[in-house]
Image (cartoon, rainbow, N blue to C red; front, side, top):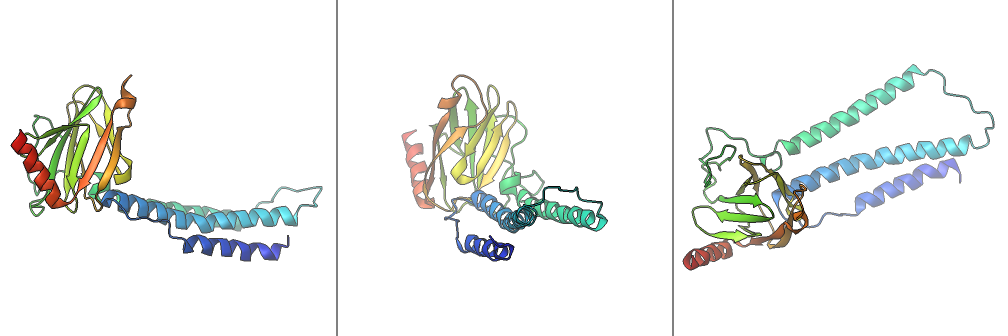
Length: 252
C-alpha cells in the first residue's frame, strides 16, 4: 500500500460515518440530551482516531525495513504540540459534558425558594418540587423495597406495583426512596437512572416524547431477589393518562 493512498481512504471513511445518521427518535428529554452528548464526543473522536491510525500506518510502512531503529530524540516542539492538543481535547470534552450535566433532567433538580413544595407522603428530606409555571407537572413517588417497587401518584391514593405510568409532553418528577437498603431505578430507553436512598428522597425529572412500553430495573445489587426487581414503564398520551388515573381513583 502506498502512503499517499492512506489519507484519501481515511477521509472517505470519515465522511461515510458522518453521512450515516444513527439517531432514532428520542423517547425523552433525558434520552435526547445523553444521545446528543454521545454523538458530539463520537464525532470529535472520529477524526482523532483516523489521524492516529494514519500516523501509525505511515510509520509502519515507512520504517518497515529499518533493522536498526533508533529512539526519538528530544523534540520540544513535538512535546508542546501534543500536550496542547491533549489539553484542547480535554477542555472540549469537559465543556460539552458540563452543558449536559447542568440541565436538571440529567444533573437532577436543585431545590430553591422558587419551587413549589413537593407532594410526598414521607417526612424525609431531599424531594424537589416543580416550578410554579409548570402547572401540568406530574409528581410520582417511588418506594423501593426488597424486592419490588411501589408507585404512588400525586394527589391520589392510586398505587401500582412494579409498574410506572406517565404522560407525554409534561414535566414529570419522580421522588425516589428506599425503605430498607440501597436500590437504583434505571429506565434505559428513557435515559433515567437514580439511586434510592434509605431515609432520603432523590428526585429525578423527565419529559417523555414517545408513547410506548419499556422495562425498568434495579441496577444496584440488593440481595438474592435483585434479578426479579424490575417492572414496566408505560408512557401514555396526556388525555389517556388522565382517564386512566380517574378510573383508578374510582375503583379505589
